[in-house]
Amino acid sequence: MLGMISYLRDPMGCMAPMAQKYGDPFSFPGNPPLVCVGDPAGIRAIYTAEPGTFAPLSSDFAVFLGRTSLLLLGDEEHRRTRRLMTPPFHGARMRAYGESMCRLAEAHTVDWKPDQKVSVYEVAQQISLDVILQAVFGVSEPERMKELATLLLDLFNGISPLIALFPSMRREFGGIGPFASFKRRQRLLYEHLDALVAAAREDGSREDILSMLVQARYEDGQPMTEEELRDQLLLLVVAGHETTAASIAWAFYALHRPENAAVLARLRDELDALGPEPGPEKLDKQPYLDAVCQETLRRFPLAPAPAPRKLLRPMELLGYSLPVGTGVGVAIGVTHFREDLYPEPMRFLPERFLERKFTPFEFVPFGGGARRCLGAAMASYEMRLVLATVLRRYRLRLASLRPDKGKVRAANAAPAHGVRMIVEERLA
Ligand code: HEM
Image 1 (cartoon, helix red, strand yellow):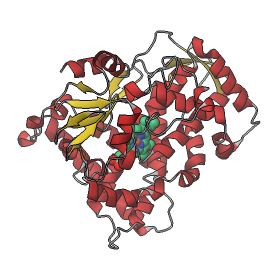
Image 2: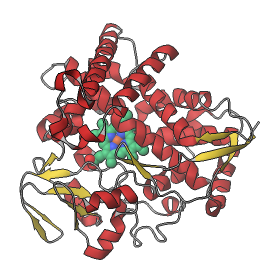
Image 3: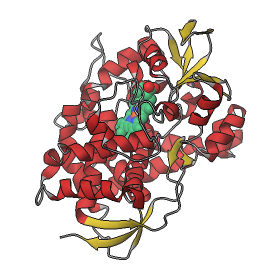
Image 4: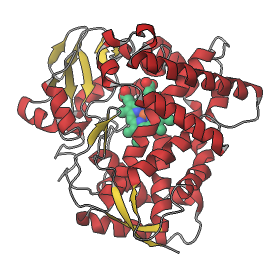
């Protein structure tokens, strides 16, 4: 309970003080308690553990995500499904979606006028959902995108804390109550997802991620079932929408804090030097833009210990013997604020990513090992393109200079006040 309260009060900053007080690893109270580790040596031990060492912690969410959701699968099934899902998310494949990412960033900001107040977080949410609808679902017709976006958001917003936190409340009670209402929305959405899958099966010429998943085959030559495809589609929205939107919004927030004026100026110089209409490929090759996005992911970790795992066999972790059943989490909120890795860790200093290469156990915004974020390349690409597209069109300033510690939304540390900004100038 105490852990939950400190997480709700300060989602990004709650972990580092615990490690300072209790050492690393430390136990994070919860149900079940988690052993959290921020030390890169401990993280290496977790991410390189033998297959069969861990199970996902929260099979409890099958009712929301679907029982075949990649996130909930045990090692063997996870490996089998992940092998099928990886190629469409390969970095090189992402190039195909660059134009659409830039176009969507333009379309959602084209009406901004000088002196207008905008919530960059809300706009980033619309962009990131539309990117998923186009790149993953293969839907580009505006009315259809709107309809699906509404169904998806209705479903997520319909998961009340009562049913999320208390499994005993997950009953339909004759069609009344929050769970019955959730199930109705879920059934409606499933009908639409099944129709999308059927359409992708019929048209073999499409290039979206769903079409690639429909064509993919397991090692035994079998395709994914309708249930698997639907569960994975839903997971990609759940895992990819709020996370990317919040990270884009944090980047705007950090860049426009007065103490980071030199960072914004350097980024603008880099982007201005590209001339008119550089296109996604050129935008994507800018080193300072990349460093800004990486520093955003370091300084604003969305969850203190995302996707914890449960031990299926005993493990030695930094000198501690952990028994079977222990929950283990990588404490990003500790690792990313270690003075020895990131001097002056509270400052926003993209230069650190130009000066030093961090190992996959020191910089862990996307987790690691066999369950590393499947959408890491897509999210990073989208962050760079959306940031560059909007900054090249507008000068903005924060509407309030009140520091933002973040607020828990859909299990992520999202900006608490929506990153409200004033449009200062529309650039030629
Ligand atoms: C900035 C945005 C994002 C962040 C910070 C992020 C972060 C993460 C993290 C920390 C994990 C857990 C990894 C682990 O257990 O070690 C994860 C898993 C996952 N993410 Fe992301 N993510 C982002 C965007 C996306 C996008 C855009 C997609 C796809 C459209 C996506 C799809 C997934 C999937 C499918 C998993 C589960 C992987 C598995 O269990 O094999 N994520 N993400």
